[in-house]
Length: 176
Ligand code: ZN
Image (tube, rainbow, N blue to C red; front, side, top):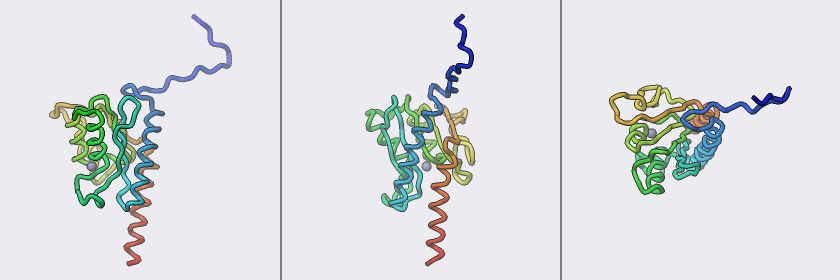
């Protein structure tokens, strides 16, 4: 048995969650946050999403409901479509979806349909979240696919972008 040199710290092993390192999750979430911030310029609710496959972003979108005048134009839906286009298949096993806000029922449902392997999200959505807040779609035993989930990654930063957006909106409304 090799002895450890006294006083020398061995690098602690990061806790693995389905094979991904937490620090890597934070790195990708930072990217999703940057995408969310870009939504502010378009006056869209700032939710950002990236889909990662083999350490590469293959889907990247923010919410575009206003611009597209489409109730389904959530960040996750657009990023999922891009990812399927990049992989040339609707089966998105091996992909991790990062999104700044807990997905709604539509987006969580789309992740199940696309066989997304893993979801990482930031802030919870007490009004519409379908992972833990309002529904728990991703660990629903009657569905034929389970998505591994990690929530709360950079939650404060993700939530702050949204709070700031709605605070500014309200201030604007009051001024009218
Ligand atoms: Zn959604």
